[in-house]
Amino acid sequence: MIAGPMDISLESDAEALWQDTLDLLASESLPEAVLAMLRNCTPVGMEDGVLHLETPMRLVLKTVSKNAPAIEECLTQAAFQPMRLDISFAASQHPAAKPAASTMTRAEADRWNAETTPRAAAPAVRPLIEDTWDERAAVAEREEENRRRRERNPLVEDISAATSKLTFDRFVRGEENDIAYQAALQVANGMNSTYNPLFIYGKSGLGKTHLLRAVQNYIARNDPSRLCVYRDASAFITDYTEAMRHSERSAASVLRQNYADIDVLIIDDIQKMVGKVGTVGFFFDTFNELIGNGKQIVLAADRTPAQLGMGKDGFDERVTSRLGSGFTTPIQVPSYELKLRLIETFCERMREDALRENVPALTGEVPEEARRYMAERAGTNIRIIEGFCQRCLFAATTAERRGEKITREEIETVARECWPSAGRTVSIEDVQKAVEKYYDIDHSSLVGNKRHKSLMEPRHVAIWLSRELCDRTLADIGKHFGGRSHATIMHSISVVDEAKREDKTFYDRLMQIRESITGNV
Picture 1 (tube, rainbow, N blue to C red):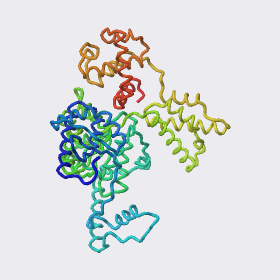
Picture 2 (picture 1 turned 180 degrees about the vertical axis):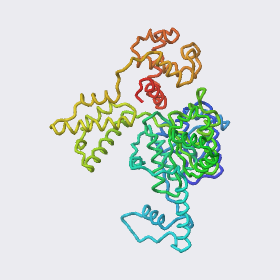
Picture 3 (picture 1 turned 120 degrees about the vertical axis):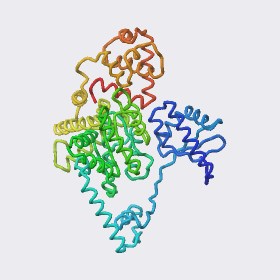
Picture 4 (picture 1 turned 30 degrees about the horizontal axis):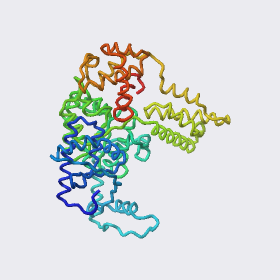
């Protein structure tokens, strides 16, 4: 790190060089998760052939350090001279700035003072603004305009009691989801306007909807002057089709105006729009208008923007380029550690709710040893894990009344019902079709002899999944992959085994394909 004040020209050079480096890295097919982490780094200076970066996230520090050789290669290319990278951790500090008097209401001033004044001192706080008649009138006028905006826009809906619980405070964090959490929080509190659009992707049941609803709840409670609308893609499609079906052409114009009069638009599961040409066109126009007017967009999908463009019905390049033009970040499948944290949190919350609401069937405690075994047996879908916890808590409460503890056998029984491993036998052909669909390649390319980089990963993955899911010998698997030898099949399996240990993004892709085959989504 460079101590002391830094020369402005050096800082500008550092920022320009880092941006050029990011552009080069994007063309090198670096995983989007890593690129998202790199964009989170701040260039703070450059001296003696060293570019200095800072990041407020320890996971980013670890990942960037691991990829330093590839980054330094592009850094050298961008600088036209040998360059090294120095990255350090800097705790995030966001001091509350004193707003201008003309934009802060009396209530806001009181809240700002309450949050920034040490509780122990509790001094009398002088108001930040003068409570004049003109200012009160201006505040009343703004509040009335906001009320009218909400009343005339049918897209604004009341937040249900269940949805209101999906807050940032209740989101269980881990390395797998912390970057998405931090990005969503910064968008919600308006601290980072460069995350626009914010695009969160990951398979079903990992917490994307929770984060999107947390943004909505945060804005509703802390900044109600911003008109925030959450829509599932299915509702967005319905909005468009109903307007187009209406006999009066004005219906379409009204819908466009309603969407244009939104400050923060949140759309969940946008992969549902694939193949809906008219809806995608309406979304494209809405996206451009909101971004052009400085409004915020938050999106979620089960795939990256690039993957949404794959296949004959995929989004075209003009759409995918806009989807990926802001900040794209994954939510990855939970590790054992995060599953254990989720189970502990869910069991404790359910028990507290049961005690408060007088539901005796869920007031017992799940012992620590039982929670650890639950984490070992749990799948990766967090919604299913929550139901798993409720059933285990019920069994633990019943056992507690008998003077006993919940057994591993009882946990195993519940786990098999939540994540059934039985059912129809998975064939190698099933695996191949799933991999071909995910990577958008044909069968001959998957099993053929071409060794293009774009084909090697899907081929290795298909072989590994065939070994994992199909009751077939290595020789049988080799016959289904162009007559490959026992040694070649073993090599593919070892490549995937190593990659899934070292690369969380790859592991997430692997589990997503696996669960698309087994049906445990």
